Image 1: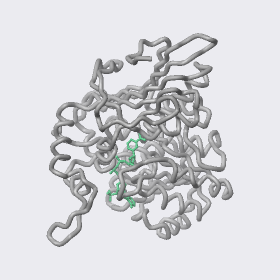
Image 2 (image 1 turned 120 degrees about the vertical axis):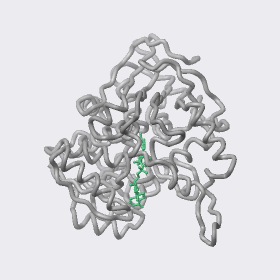
Image 3 (image 1 turned 90 degrees about the vertical axis):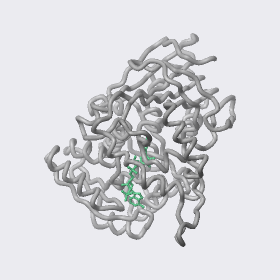
Image 4 (image 1 turned 90 degrees about the horizontal axis):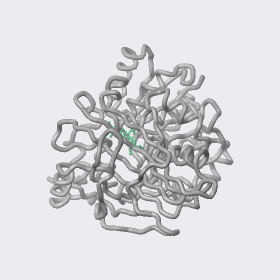
Length: 402
Ligand code: NDP
């Protein structure tokens, strides 16, 4: 029975809060804090009506460490779940260090003025978290998150050595809007407009954005054009599983989405360089975010499903084998459960499960860790129970050249 402070009342924050409310024997008291308190109050009302649970709410600017410290001291949670934006990772980790409270997030830190994400900034907290006797669990959504747990599960149960890893992420859904992003537009567009990168033979190979793509077959969906992107879990997975010779990440995009994105890029709307407009400094990408639909609002009429998994080739008992482990999540399943779309849902459910692993002591040690460093079995057992069943195919026919 533990108190938990959730920071960030967006699409993912709504899912995490409701899923925590659905497990009161682990999350005995919940506080949701965010920049715009009215969004916390809307989620509190859903918790009251749909989950019969009262949660507390608070206004918080999590960039402000003393403000976050003061809120933590007042509420005294055992764990802070950060589902605000990656820019807040370091200030919230600082606040946790000052107050001696555990930390969990779903996306690694990136500086606001540079579209560059990597774990180095957060891994640098390792010694300080150890000395303080608290734990930070990094990247506990779906990707990063479940993809790391899937890889750890493959290593534990199916391989002596893993050699090739392809993470494949498909959203075969239709939200009926001409253009919208499924998670925070600013973070999403920063991610996909930067250069692509993959790991091969001990080094990173960089490619122009979206320049490598091919059709990949997804279960229950069929073939979808998938683009090679850099994704943060590649960094920790090749470090934690050093036998991996090549690790890549693929994500599907529809032609309509790509055309809109190209136009927005060409006219300068995706830039993160500030410009002066009518005497006020604005960042074009932040302005674009303000006019696009909120990820939390896409759920109601969303049809189709997502499919995310890991395709692995390696060696077991001296023989080559292939393996595919994945989850498919219909958008309407997510909407029925917590009034969300699948991208927020597939992030928020694993976040709650990761928090449960920490608070029940099944994943608990002082320091800063990625999800694949823990036993995958109890996590995957709970993941199925709480809405995200997963499937495995041994000796799968994988769409890659080895
Ligand atoms: P949203 O934009 O819907 O929500 C973000 C929320 O954070 C908003 O409510 C926003 O407040 C709040 N926020 C922003 N800045 C601050 C601040 N300084 N202090 C307090 N609150 C703040 O995004 P999502 O819910 O889609 O995404 C949330 C996080 O989840 C992101 O970091 C994203 O990268 C990550 N993610 C991870 C995935 C994974 O699989 N690992 C997949 C999808 C997302 P306001 O409402 O006032 O703007």
